[in-house]
Each structure stands twice: as C-alpha cells, then as structure tokens.
Image (cartoon, chains in turn brown, green):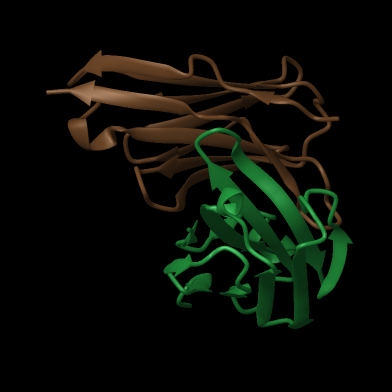
Length: 113
Length: 114
C-alpha cells in the first residue's frame, strides 16, 4: 500500500524567504505526482503535475522536483509572500488504469509580513 | 471548460433526511473520484469510477452512503439517512489519461447535518 508523508505538518516563515516543502512516498513505482494548494474553506487547486519520467516542473515562483529512487518530491517556493499562506498537499498516482492517487496530509504554510 | 462542477455548494439538513450531492466532471475525463474532508480525518477517498463503472468503493463508510454514475457527465453521492457525523466537505474530482491523470477538483459541497 502506498503511503505518502508530508513533513513538517506546519511551517511559518518571514516574507521573502525561499522555502522547501517535502513529500515522501513508499512505493517508487509511481505514475505521477501532483502538488495542490488549499486555502481555508476552499477547494484544492492544482499547482504542478510531474510525470514519472520527469525530474521537475516549474511554474512562476514554484518548482517541484521528483526523485523516484529515493521516494521524494520537493516543492520549492521562491521569495515567499503572505499570499502563499495555505495548505499544500502532494498526491502520488500509482494506478494507471483509473488514475487513482494517494494524498499526503499536507503542510500548512504561514508567511508572515 | 468550466471545470468540475459540484452542487449544491452548501447543504444544511436535519438528521435522518436524505442528501444528494451532484458532480459534473470535465468533459472527456473518464475517471471520477468522490472525497470527504474533515479536520479530524483529512481527505478520504470514498469511491471512484472509471468509464462510469465503480472501481473501488471500499472507502464508503456505511451502507447509508451510495454513489452512482449513470453517464459520463454526471455522478451523485447520496446519504440516506444522514447523521451529524456526516458533516464534512465533499469533493468531486476527475481525471483522464489525456490529462496525464492529473486531478481537477470541484469547489466542494459543505454539508452540515443538524
């Protein structure tokens, strides 16, 4: 059974700092890995999707990397802003028939002005 | 595309009543997932469909919960009878091979059972 872990559960940083969020998974035979953002009381918004054949994906100030052999992915946020405050979840897809993914519990990020 | 559409956005009902949540996936997506999110248990997969066929309903908590997908553009999640512990946010998501199996979530239905 695939297990997905996100540590730490919460993180607080001052505005402007570069930061890294971590996601680890137990089964390296993944199909894809997806990072989401969730604001309080809102739905999940997809940030980046990395296929198993890729090493990283970038979107603006966000960069997600994937290392299947070590069972790890990182989400790098450059020059953090208070608007980046949210919960970030990673989801690992391992079933190509229906695309089912396993979610981590998320890291809640607070960026202080 | 308008994305994954869920209705209603909010539902308040009395214990014992039947509740029906609705989801319209993205056109062309052939996998559909129902999740429940609470503070205590986080995001839980309830059931998912592929090509309108239920693949795994092991996450459905009790027989009070049922889900259907009569066609590729519509799915329902029904709770009958509802109980206060069913209060949660229910999300629907869809994906497909053409989207590299990336999930797109709906905005969710916030259910409160009093």
